[in-house]
Length: 397
Image 1 (tube, rainbow, N blue to C red):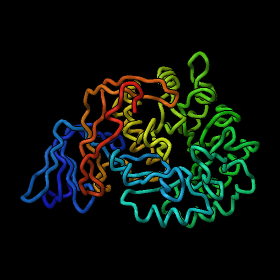
Image 2 (cartoon, rainbow, N blue to C red):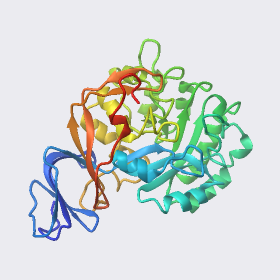
Image 3 (cartoon, one colour):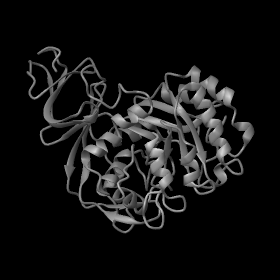
Image 4 (cartoon, rainbow, N blue to C red):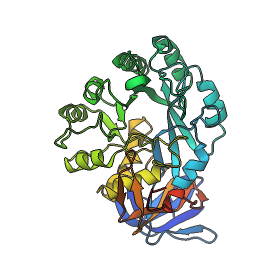
């Protein structure tokens, strides 16, 4: 639909537009005005002076949303710069997954969210300090101490920052939740219920088990690290999806990739996909220990799933409309007239590249989504160098 036939600031012309939110998969033009989508049509008029971005032969998709990142840069040992990583991966929205809790969120908002050019949203950690000791040499579980899981303060801070807080984060498994185990999830769900927000729950090494965790999740809650390797994989020894996992999906639990440094295995992914179980959302879990591999960024993770057999439109859905709906921001991740003009352009190309998962297992690619540029609120950004596109065959790095 066209608002009017002139006055565009820019036109993205002739690309294959894939916009799952609006059931669009067609070659067409997109008109941009004042940082928003003004028109979408097979061919738009080109008034004098309009900037034309030639997308012939390219895929044009809504602005990407990375649902699981850690971008509390400089204040945490593992935080990465959201603008640097987002630009190289062509991501419009970075969602921090619990780096900050009630006691540290004011700093995160002032020093990261406000100055970032990239849109940054967040899951607030149920633990008061957030993830405070995550490093190569120091690992202390923030969900293992009951006194830190202070529901009233979590709710208070989330309400004070309702513009940016999209849910509550809790990490479970091994030393992260210690003897508390599922009690930490109970606290997170209590806070989330008061706020009317979802929980994003990290599944790590047992205990608790994958099944025990998903059995407790509510409709709209998000299980991240869904294709982690054993132990606590989503599939059994026969490579079939666990019954509790299927039951959780039927009642509306969402399953997110969250690659990171220890949470994506090709064996789990391929077995789940072969058994008809695809992820609801793809995310990178990019942080200081995964940004240089094996996760790198969202685009790298998307390409891994693409080469595991997910069709391109399904990959696009999992990084646009699906995460937008999961965090209650349906205005994002879509290209309807009036939407923010966040777009990403890609070329689907045959490229020889070795992908490596968190166990060291590798797969060789057949094709890649290669960046061709992006628009953030209508402003053009050139494609940036990606270190993962130039691996050494021996190690994928």
